[in-house]
Image (cartoon, rainbow, N blue to C red; front, side, top):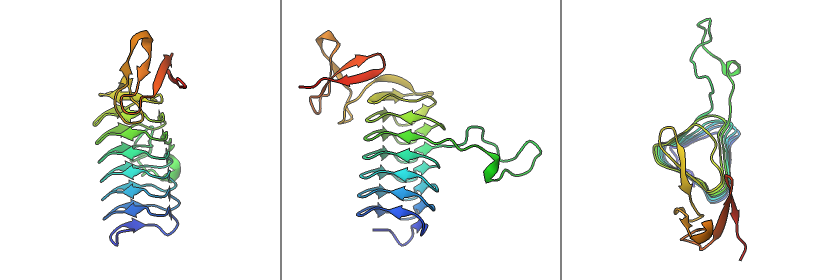
Length: 195
């Protein structure tokens, strides 16, 4: 279902059972998977790729060339930026054109969540199942299952697939309170322990 008031370019690809709400704008060559929700006033730039089962909440802005995995949550008014050196004009004062600046995309892994009002700077990679707290400003990449918060965002813990903080047990093992999954930490990388 696409709301009559949404602005969806005919060259955009929208998957089956995806819903696009009032005043959302989806640009040319954007690709949105199946069973997604694109909220009111969201903006999906040209060529952005979004996987299946994603929720892009109201007023979220996703700029090219972002790549969003499956099952990703992008909270209300979150912004995924793309301009490394933002300026309206060139050094000579002329208005910048499309070829006068370098776009650097953001990659978001499967199952990750970006909280309301968070800002992600260009070129960042957000690992699978990571969680960005509301209002955070992300200036560096986040490992899988990483929990970041603050300005600038800092790694403050690890989260499981259910979005809750992993609990530490004796011997340094980390346990997901939602699923019971167990992990060990090797450097910055979370390693699942097979049952």
